[in-house]
Length: 340
Ligand SMILES: Nc1ncnc2c1ncn2[C@@H]1O[C@H](COP(=O)(O)OP(=O)(O)OP(=O)(O)O)[C@@H](O)[C@H]1O
Ligand code: SF4
Ligand SMILES: [Mg+2]
Image 1: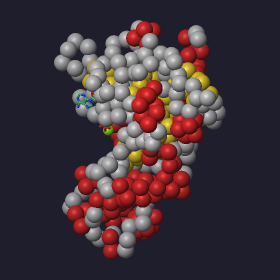
Image 2: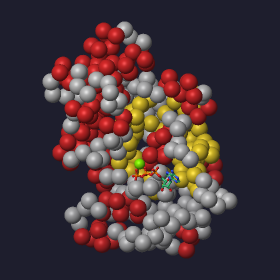
Image 3: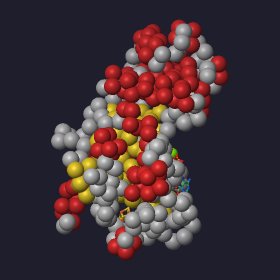
């Protein structure tokens, strides 16, 4: 495969369709100071585009770079990280070249984020109804009474019990699940075009997690919002993501529509993630590998080579390109797994 073909395939991989994407991340690179001469590369050239209304899952283990990606999309990589290159196009603008005040106007109005630990997101001194209403006042310019009406309506949509009463509650009076519903209400009240959910329900109990994720997906669809849904748990994405991207060590190693990803996973790392959820001993024995080298960075070749059960010498010398192996199904591996 020639370089031009690889680049063109990579662009297609990122797009997920023929229409112009809502958000288009191109060759995004983020580094952190390492103490040595060379900064540590944490995002190593991410290409990812999301269509209007599409829900894209982003999965990978802890430390893969998911939060770094979520925050860098908004122009705010976690400190002391810095954006070392690349572009993020959103509604015709290159986000990474906007001024701080332009970015602030965009966040909350057209782009919003739902993170775990909702209590840290809410102001403990303000009633939740006022906090939600202030989003509509600031970003949509609506008057106080209308903003409160909208706040009450969205509290109903997020299925908070007794929403009239909750309007006047303080954050500490809410359970963790209710506080997360309030944060979702704040994220969605302006019907943003794009929502990033970064591990939004971790920390909540499993039943509440499932309810809140189902609600988040339903409301994103009703508000016409596209979503990047980030999770360590690939199983969760099976329920409502249209496409799923697998991130390993700062690189997308596989991206595909939901069915091919779950039925015909091709990257050994994706198989390892799925094996953890599988009842099949054969799958688990073949693809689950000891976790000895998980923090080791490779300077050349495939980032997964030290953990990969089918690695070959070529894997350790050249970085594999992201290549298309089926419609919309791309994998960064020299020996993608074929399913009979
Ligand atoms: N403050 C920091 N200083 C140095 N390196 C950092 C810092 N924050 C993150 N990193 C580096 O960035 C990598 C990615 O971190 P990130 O928080 O994006 O991972 P994640 O995929 O969101 O993990 P998790 O699932 O635990 O939330 C880490 O492995 C680490 O090497
Ligand atoms: S390129 Fe080689 S080492 Fe990397 S995932 Fe594929 S087979 Fe494994
Ligand atoms: Mg994270």
